[in-house]
Image (cartoon, rainbow, N blue to C red; front, side):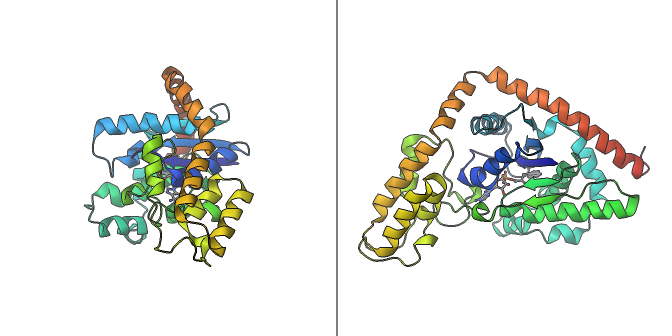
Length: 321
Ligand code: TYM
């Protein structure tokens, strides 16, 4: 079984990235042949500066390795180190109906937020399809916001197979219901573009401030809260605290008598503890950047040799070769 997923270097990684994709991806590396990459080509649709891209790319590599991605088990590389993927994207784009892309909600959301509709933003899912198909991927662990893009990938692969003969493996998205949509500090989906993120490796003081600033209702501590399970702080606490501790806070909030300040303080402490060993590992990696760069380069060579084979298959099937 081959597992594949990608993550954009468009800013510091946050708890949505971690629980939605990175942790499942790290667990899956025990169960198959895992290919994970830093989607720097995709980041060009929203980040238009070179230096932040370079810096974020290294940061994503450090964050993912610190969180437990094991380069002995997974192939971990930069998307642009396998340029074959852009060639496949062109081939796929010739079979992609406009309507399929026009229906993509992430594109529509971006337009609705006033982002200029560049062609790259529109064609984003086709490059993502190429990412997935070029490694014969079976399973794609992602958060809920990427599900539609994996469905587009399946549609494009089926179309190609029908047109030119059996060529691509049809992938399956893998989404965990409990962590499909991690809420941010304002209760909406945690996302860099909403400015509501809690970083995995945020600076202590700034992160404490963000967590203490989580948006809550105006209830007094004594009041019971029947829908305690919908509270953002409780939802986040369930991710970072032992199950019995989180349950206890939830019950106290439901019954009345627990103030939001105490709940947020507990959330910060558990969050800080949860990532403490990863934080130490990250500091070691920062002191050993040659190792990090070597991981990316070696992995790219391995990824490229597989990509080359699959691209060749598609070129033969479609009469290019
Ligand atoms: P990106 O960089 O936006 O996010 C990386 C992963 O994090 C997940 N995620 C979340 N999950 C739950 N709750 C949240 N609040 C949350 N925020 C982010 C995303 O669902 C994603 O899995 N297009 C992709 C990158 C990509 C890719 C690929 C992924 C490029 N090619 C091929 C899979 C396969 C993206 O922008 O992810």
